Length: 292
Length: 292
Image 1 (cartoon, one colour):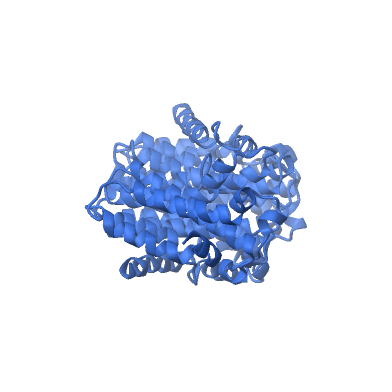
Image 2 (cartoon, one colour):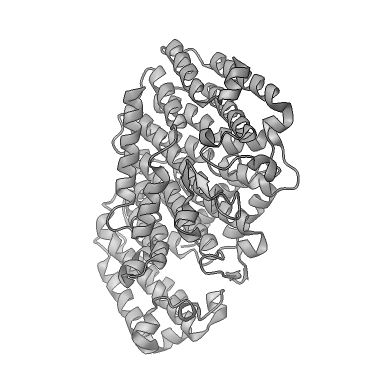
């Protein structure tokens, strides 16, 4: 996993070197780097790279870039989600949110430029990839996960609707990038992405439930942002739906379903081990004890 | 030009049909369509298609989609530029701006989803194009024109800096999409995009000067948005720099320089005629009289 993680960080570094160079307006350049480094757990790129590596025919350049693109889109969504008109969050990853540190204008433009940088990164990889003909399908998978009708922008837009389908809301708001990570990893390796979507869907939902538990139990350090936001904003949450114990059990079941869903491939056993190892990191302490 | 315009509208219609379908949150779906239809003059896609058509080896699918992608990015930038923290504009293209008609949250998400839709459109075309190997270079050209360091997001970010280079500001804020339109048109036809940038640069600057003249002369109908914004926001403007007559002369010179810059290609004469015809539409009446 270290090699993969390193290569994804290198692609992110290259993307930011292109975007936030000396020609870039200084505040925007600073905000772009601030939004991406130091990162969170980079769980989505790790999933993408792990799926790519579990298949034969992997194209490391394309896989790393797909992972990095998804991470850039994740960072963009955090910057926009924190804005005053959405979550109005002052903190993110244990430091000031972008609009708090800079201002609202720079935050909007930072999110926009990060979205663009994600697709620039895919095109950059496509021009150097071993299998450039895979660029279109990888780009399609990534784009659909972040736009409308079923990507994270659409997920966020459900919060403006009077009637919300909770499953669709979570699937698009948090699950979409995990589904893309798994499917794009497979597509970058020349495998059919369709059967890989379920792994991303289950891990994405597990990650959301873990986040709901951290929010509800007030584990501010683990969350790196203000807690009890779901209740304050009256947002759907697994804890509010099932209780704390029920949410922890549900989280455990989601992980098992994810592991079972992994399609036959040369690296299936190794991938299951990796997913289990990674899950240990994002399961909150309370949830871990109850789900153990 | 009619064939070209039709095909670009069809690609835009297809893009919106994918993004704003029945699974999309209703307000976001409505705002996406509202931002793109009915459109403005679609001058950027027309330039892209005209350049592609002037070269041998055109790939109509890729060229139409590059033009449509650039138009989607243009629409996205208008939605975000109108936001309260930027221009705070109530009107656009003679109707309410998106955040006025819907709200700020939907406006931010609409811009985000339109950016994504642009790249989804390129990938969609790439999977069906006659020459899919051109997808990476076309995508790179389009992405660089809209992100950082030299695209429209960067151009907008210069407004947050204490010291602004006016030429760089205009080149990135308004010129970038015209440069991309010309270069992507060439790249979609398999031609070297580099010598085509100057045409886009000159037309883009001419278009900006025309806009400055409309803003200064208060031709609200021609502009389709509030006038005298440059002076109110103390923004750089050719009219403020050169006076009205000077700006009109400058506009005429830019167009001639653009026409002269067109590289040798089979359709050079026809392309010059098209550019002249198109310019007649966007030159403001006052500027036209003075520049005639």
